[in-house]
Image 1 (spheres, rainbow over the protein chains, first blue to last red):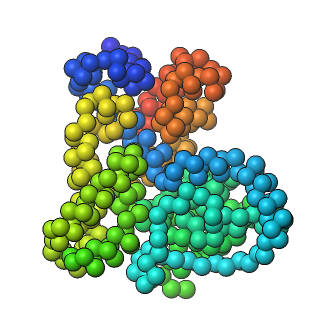
Image 2 (tube, rainbow over the protein chains, first blue to last red):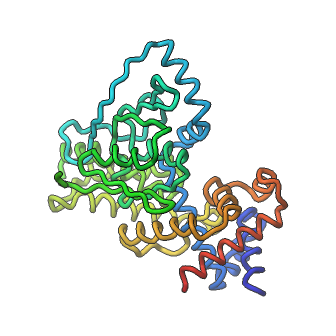
Length: 195
Length: 159
């Protein structure tokens, strides 16, 4: 069987694995090429999994970012929101506050400010913030270490600003370093880094 | 590790450990069970861990427990959820590096159509007919995109 045929068979099976017995599956996956392709797909799934570390609700709501922004904007006007940029970083590492770093399913911390393009993040996980902004700029986000995902920030983002402006703003936070490398924004936490 | 230390560790690292378990099990409930059971057991056993190595210890324990959960699954269950079949022997850094390189290539080395199909299949776990309907293409075209993308990735990383 040609490699492509094997791959197609594997793909078909993965859509309906129940259609095969354990023994048949075992036999198919015993083929080195098939197994290699399977492991590759498993790795690809992992890539997508780590992109979205928060519950789907969060992502879904922010994929329709513009619609959500319009609703929040209306609420902001009605409520007469005061706005203040308060960059504040809470690290999960060694803080006496021992912040709650569980993944917050949503919006408490996110609000729309005066201009429709202005978004306020208040004590929101970094990976959640970047899920929103990366979709806007069409970039992938790659955390060089998983702990950095959990940093919580309060900041403002103007979606009309360039990505470079946002990166410069986020890089103001102690120890946080974002770099734009082609299609991907890489994120890392550099402990103890001084100006 | 006494109760107070474990409480502190739980508060500081629970979310990270949960994410780690989720990255292996793809299931929030199972991941929560793994982490909860680990801390419950540690509270009972109160093992001695060298100061400064607590997180590494917890992380390794979570990964081992996840491996045990995966080992108990049938092959059909594994294939259904696309769990890796090989036991992961890479360090966390090496694994992160591997996935970073893969992610970069998935973004830059695949055509837009391949990326869309890939994301719908492996990111959103949609069935082929759903992908075909969503993109307005045939199921055969979905297969072709996937096979082409996989071949391209394989070729790139085996080169």
